[in-house]
Image 1: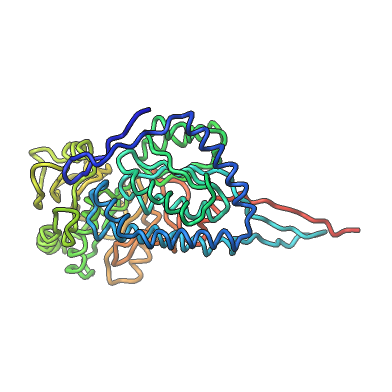
Image 2: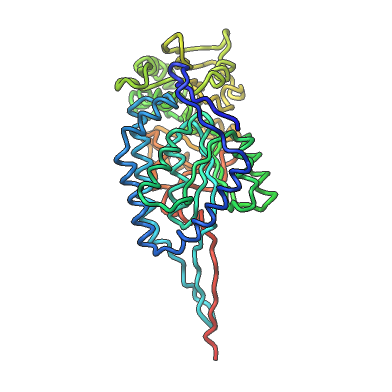
Length: 454
């Protein structure tokens, strides 16, 4: 059995060791989940909702514990980690509210009555990433359970601790044994075993586009349902008529939050040429004011990267001769630290302007008019998120409709709310998560016609 060493990204020190789940154990977990799912789906909706609210209450009672686990295994600043734990709680609470509202339809037809039902799929595999371990694990787990399914959650190799604790809390809250299991392990071993198991009805994956393609191909062999939330290279479009002071002040956090390890990070900053110089003057102090340091410190806004491997990847995009316009500070010594970095003078088709770096590196590009802004915004294979800054409401609507992305914000950088759907265009993914329709993504629609003719 392969073991995974869990490191503290801020120090590089080993926290603990977690055994991986071999393929034969994955098979047994699927069997346990299938049995528990049948019992779960047979419960009255009000009882399922009540148990999910108990899970939410259990998470709420362990918020600080979960947050500190996230600080240690993911290197997230403690303020961010508390928000993430609270978001996991809120997702279970929100999903519980949907259990008793998962209604079908009565469709007018001649000669009878036509009804639709939303029925659970069975066993769902959720493969969560390391960048937001708690919230994204709950994105799939909570609505899947609410829709009457069992869930097998595979966390990332580097961040399994919060997932394991969430499963313990769910069992303590009263969820049936086997209904929600966490299976730590490597993607090519545990992940592949889950994806290829015929007893798994759907796979929900968040991660890189490259791995997403592989999972989609493996699911195709079984005609298995899949939801993919993949990479991004999101634009932050700043028009000259915008509140430039506010746009610049918030642009730093839009690509530095979570040390840039965010598929929604606004790492392509597009600024109208007449406001470019002023924007850059204001961006520099905003970058330097973004406090980098010990994730356990309440004042810290940016922590380390997740691993040495990730740091080397980020470094490969910023060689010694890179056109660095702004560079922040970062701790030296132990840990996987990297400073905030802003590049200018980069061609729009340069790989730093089109590829997902997944680190605290942004590229600033000038544009002349609305048409060019839209063209630049759409000039990547991705289409997950983005922001635009303008005081012109008509322009805000025109550009929002023209940018090929699933989640856009005007005069804001907010992308994810559990009340609203989330997902990407193009190679940023397939399907939608969250929002009022989240539960239906984990159901089959059954149509029943009842003849009324004599």
